[in-house]
Image (cartoon, rainbow, N blue to C red; front, side, top):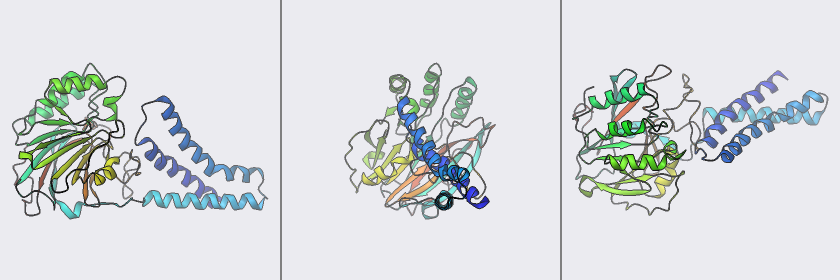
Length: 358
């Protein structure tokens, strides 16, 4: 009986975590949608536990004992799937294309992560492309604003080709103007580009965020695209699932980079012939445990897409950690990413590519 109870309880725990990840990953902009998702999670857990309840009331019943054993077996299978989730054709790709990876302190509670990726389909006419990536700032206090300004001031004058903002800039309207101004102050060769996240589109912030970005010269890619690097690279901004739109596939002969707040769009990127996607939203995974990894990752694919480089078919996806964890008192520090893209014959380190020194 103890083993039956243990298997069922274990299954309930991972069901709440894993199903919670999947149904809350896309989020909901309405109270009704939130309650529906919450009910789905709790209802599934209750269904898994119901045979134990009946078994307690009628312990001699062979039928309920069989159901309890089945419930426990399902719980164990759920736990195994939680540890080794089904990956929908997605796999980690670090060993394939990551040439180097390093971090260095940038400010208190913030590090600069430098990654060099050698993409097989990279256009030969572009030696390399240096992107500064900021995801999930959630700049909601004066302390965080000052820290953000300090970090960005130390990145001024560095050889970035483009600055990429992956959304969720902040929820306090009073701080948004200064936060956007600080983000727009970093100079780059081709400009600053933004795809908005779910928090940017909630509670009547959508119009304010768009106006502030436009005012500061930030290009908003709201289910739209543009070309950089002399037309050799196409940038596509995806605001799905919060703002869905029908998008034409990219020309497979043109190298394309898709910016998305959420990594849930990896399947969409593959359908659109995107070569490389860049996403945030996961905050690098939460409740990380040794060996097991992240327990809470808000994606429809479960806890697998937490951070790092992934691949589905011919599409690569880089999931950036959050800046918004700073000042890093509770958990890992916030991270700003410098991503250097090159071809298979490109340089092997960020330092060799002229990486900024914090």
